[in-house]
Image (cartoon, rainbow, N blue to C red):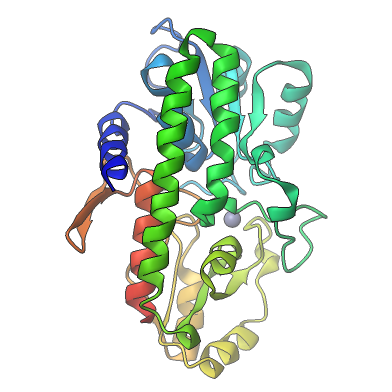
Length: 315
Ligand code: ZN
């Protein structure tokens, strides 16, 4: 637990200085290597490992849906200027995937962090995602652990003098992620097995479900991109009723209207605690629950929030 607290302080302490929108401040003014990231979970991971040795710019802010993210003016310039780029991969960044892959072909130091996860641990989505794996791997901290070494290695190649520092932080963070997983296991155990049914806005929770023994249903498929991908609402309503659910969940990066309509039809409640599916909260959004404080603008805090919200909503 000590390690977790220590790391929590580190994470919270750095939280406010990172993740500035790309248009703020002059890029490169720090003289440190410029590292550009995409989704907030990836930004947080690279921030934890890179610490003060790098200048970090995350393209996507809190609450931004990476499937639907439209590159902004300045993004391609930032990617071109970057000394290193880390992205999630597995087609999470739907509209950026091609340019990121092309960048990786012609440049060094461009990495998809999910390349660190063995393929046999990846899930095929319930319905076709153009032949791709389900990208929502961060749903289970036991899988997210596998991305850490890749970041340590990538940053060390960029900044060999920092290699030892990155490795030390990587080891500490892997330990923190394993502790997070154990903590989550203990919390989830409070929900009787027959009540472990998670209904959310889109298919972002299958890794979570597999890891923690939940049946998972999403109103939309694995990507939020096609609005036409809304599944048969009546079928979901009858599933909710059939499973005797009382609470279903909205997500912070998806418009809650559709899931609220489902809840209305099924006569159940949408939890007032929206889940962080594809984006973390605002950095510095520290909340207290069960005598413990955590920052929902970090990966550790995001998972704690989700687990607490799900357990309290379903138990
Ligand atoms: Zn998603």
